[in-house]
Length: 337
Image (cartoon, rainbow, N blue to C red; front, side, top):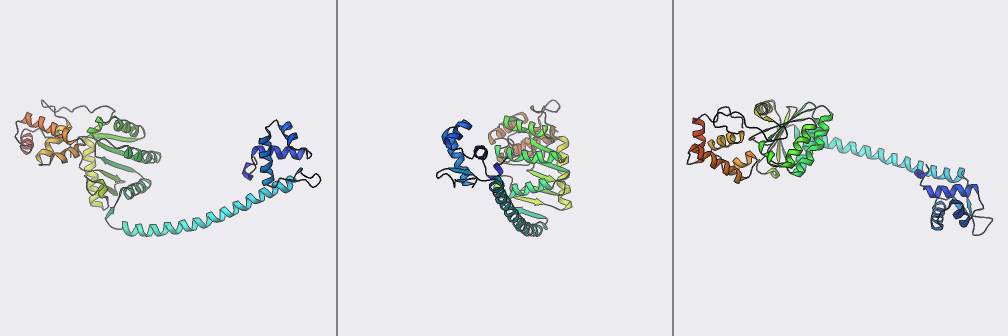
């Protein structure tokens, strides 16, 4: 129990033995304690360094134990003095921290007084998301685009999810159906589900989005380049619109069960949600790259789905395929965005 004073266990035993037998020398201590001589000498050196053992006045070359009322009290007083100094430094640091916080808060209030706030760089984006997560009190809504999630993204989301779950915040997240092609992402979604995140999947999503308490949202500036930065949006009108969009997609999305989503009843054609999304996107005249991004699949996979659908429709162009699908009623009730 004397280690907080800087006195190790072996040194304490040697000091105790010297107090009991002031006439003991090194060999006597070796015999009494049953230790190796090097260990005894090391413990003695520690006691000498702490001024608990000093050279004997009566026996030249001998040692004597200092009274614990003097030696140990001196060690205790030294620790108390250092503790008071640390308290003083902490108090001074607390004042300096408060000054930094006040300056930061003032700067952020000025920045955040606008309806649109621009975030530049991954560090800035993640720091802001962490702040919003800590402030989030009721609900977090998420559009998770990109299909399979990166290891960095998965690791970053877990502590945030745990924190929100502990505070009783409702979490609803929508991922792309294509996540089922990546076992690591599927396992991650299972983890989120077990920790309170209500997860669903859908064929396509308009953009990555985080909506906190339906008061502010975080969206990418450029969906194809996350490094370009993000926007924080406020304002009742835009937030209400984003909330309605989320609710509409949520209603038609498929609850995550750990397995691949089962195709809905589409009549004789039995189109999957992914095929429905491709047809709608083709009708909008989007490029193969954009279609693939919205589905969270590779361009090659997107082109394969497109080719199969064009064959079934007898269309010569992607735009024509979209129009024919609409004329045939294949897009009726589409759940994609």
